[in-house]
Length: 227
Length: 337
Image (cartoon, rainbow over all chains, first blue to last red; front, side, top):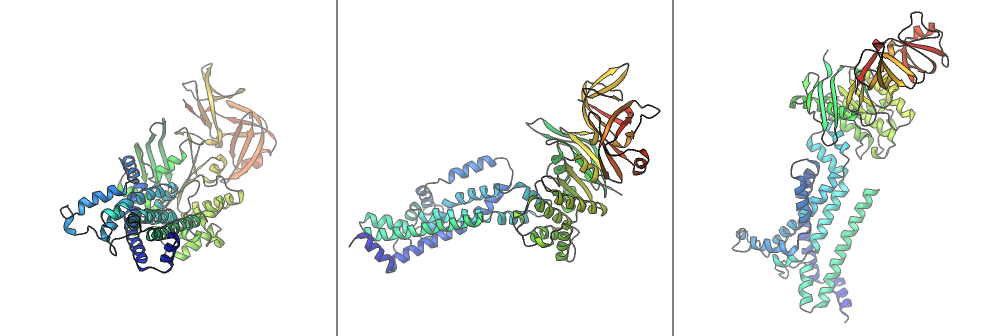
């Protein structure tokens, strides 16, 4: 049978292994994106709205970290989480939790920098108007988050897209354990190396569908912002 | 009654630009309005931003109801009792109602019934039917009215406005001016900047003129750049090729003069006791403001005189008539460069 047709058959017959791998991928990426949003958006807001010495350097550093190689994150995290490492006692290596942490580290600079950009693009007069209407710093933050909600959502979606498509961290700290830490990307890499092209292609299609879904979500968010 | 604003020896510098704002002394009593006039880049907005603590002065002091704005207590008071209308007005991307409610709930003089307060402010600004409209998508005149309604709902003791009627149509401008007039009748103090000297005269109890960051000690209606010279021991200012004004004794070659419009006398014929400054011109404009007539006379340059209605009625003058302009050197303020 043609490998592509066999792959489509695996998808449409709801193959349990394909579903399990896809579900884990979505779970770890969603968790990483949620955690990175919770930390990165407020951090980006604070950096974007404040004026402090060293801000330029901090922004430059975060910009550089946006291009962080996934294998480097995986390697550093491996040394931290390995049995003899500083965080070895947590026994997180080769667990979905380790992948979540790695992806969180990977996308935090992306989310933070996109949030800095979203905050910086808010009309300064708006913030000053709120301040001269006796608004507290928290009220001003809520106002800015509401004003640029589409930009912050786009940042979160972009972070999710980066997390779900990375492979280095999933392999290095996840270990690609079948039924436990095997994600879409690590499974594609493994199956292809084993010559199991049909399974690899099927997972590739699912990954493509997720990527398309993320892009569609981003498009809808941007469309809503323009409306 | 305490002065709402009292400025002493205020200096604000902008490093790298060479620009500095200098206000030696300015007092705005409670319940009074002060118009700040001057060309673009003269420091009007900077002065307003200093008054609401959005900028910090390099030296000097600003007292708000007796509290120095350089102290935490002063800044807290400024946040509670001052509001600033930016130009152009900044709208929150939500409904007009929510924009106004944002101010109402944060007012130090918050009313028991917030909804009624918002409704009152919307009605005063003629926005009853705009409640549900997205404020960010309104026209510039409508946005300015929302900003005014927001300020009304905040019930400030000091209202600061940057060019409140700039770039908006006449109908909206008139409505805004009416709201400001009614605000003046309440006990709020108003400081606003404007490019229109007529508007400054209409709405301002006090008028401050700024030129390149320096506060002018005079009257913006009759402000002229001048070359100074002496003749027979007297000082003169040449404000146009053929207009020489006798001025108080001064040093320097160039500068500016301003003439107090309330001390210019208009008459169909030259007065019997000829004053030191006597010019002939034609009346080109008449306007009522602050209970007197503002008369513009073209005499090679435009001179503005403020005339009591009773004096005007007995003067025999009318729009388009020729007339004599008379004033003494003591009515002229001089500033040398």
